[in-house]
Image (cartoon, rainbow, N blue to C red):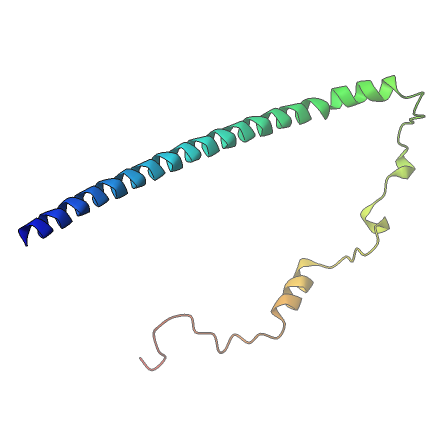
Length: 124
């Protein structure tokens, strides 16, 4: 009987060792994939920083002005005249309403009589 118990105990020890090894191997693989993802995130952050810097250079007013003067003839560019600019009144769908009208519309006919503002009852 003790032989069977010893055999079962030895088999359980080997099974536990194998299971522990597989968990350790899986954890190492997960750690490697996490490090790979972190590096990819760093690369993407560097790329975003590079693109922000590139956008800042490309959209600088000085560069745009130089391009406008260089290609003024070939693109038939003209200076914007004052009458070409629109005002807020010229835009469709714009309604001039005061702030009090908007707030009144949002609140509506809400009554403040039923609003409880504390846990103290009126009987006390």
